[in-house]
Image (cartoon, rainbow, N blue to C red; front, side):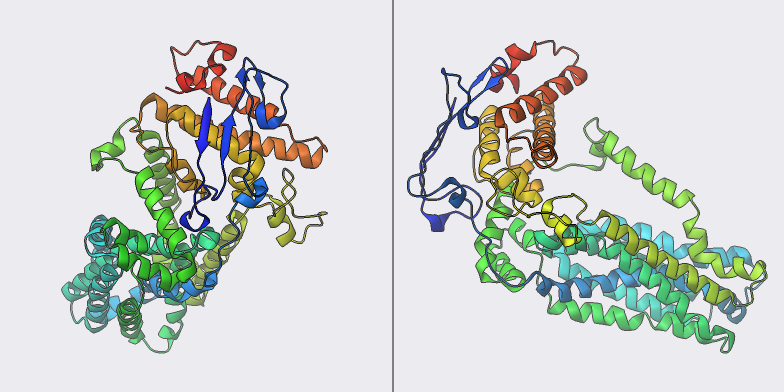
Length: 517
């Protein structure tokens, strides 16, 4: 089995296909023996790496310079105004409900009070269903600007309401607005964030929702001395709504959306604004690879209940359901009334303390899940004493997740070989998601798709196991054993998942292209 990679000019590649080299790769697979680059003595097949002018490790691209990652933070901050408005509109009714009920003459009518509270959620339901469609049709920034209209009008109507009807209409409009933001804020942030800080920014949306709830609870502190302050609390929301619309006029559109619309030149301009001109080619290449890797037919709502997605959707929906059944909504909407009923004098202040604990918990959770993989670079960042930060396999570059699993010269050949098993070819991205999708080209579900997913996980798991043996047991790198372990794990999973899969491991592993079909 061979994989040929002809030389290309160095300036022409933007992924991880090396430039300016010739490589012929053959991997020995006979029973449980794997050779080639791993130094096996097996003769029928061998793996030979013959760089033309440079060492193998030099074939990997060096870090491409560009604008600092922090240059996207102002645009992320503008988008987070939508998340903060989401949280503010959720919590603003907490402290103000009693006072607006007196002002509107519905103190004794708890049903109408409940309608005022729940009207926001009714509108949010509509907005959440339409937000994604609007973002796909008009673009992310234009949708933000359109979304600012119901947010501003809703806040204004609530602040000036002289009747229950006006108040409910205002809450409905505000609900539509926050429903749309719930869909497009995390979408926009993920699409403009550079890969190196995308994980860190992934939780910013939730953090600003909690900050918005806290701001609403703090805004209620003057209510005791000024009963009509509740109107100001609602009116305040007009300001960030206008700022959101204005901010999006100077924010770049999502490069991914522009690319999907075929606006290549505009996408390159957006990338240049976000990351600098040095990274335009690299980002555009990643967008191309991702679009090719995820080229599947349009999915409808009923597809969510198909066998392919049923488990994932069920787990996600159950988690959200349990979150709601835990009673957090009752705390957000009625904690002031609960504290008052419990005899706590400073009921609004107590609610503000609950909001502060919510923000604190979000920050703690964010820190717990951020960069938890204990690679050497992460350990050094946490000031854990280690001898060096180099990759334990090649001892040339720093050990990061992308390098360890995908870039290292002793690992790349395994992935190249895997491409031949499933019949794909193309650039070699190091972003884990893009890397998976790159090998997913042309697979529309079915057996080959499931087997590839198992192999992808099995190989990464085996790489991590080999890494731990090298570091903690001073074992030498053994690529043959690594590949054997990964294949055995994948074969075991196939046996467990596929009823008719009864092939012996030695026979299966001796003809892997057929074994993955």
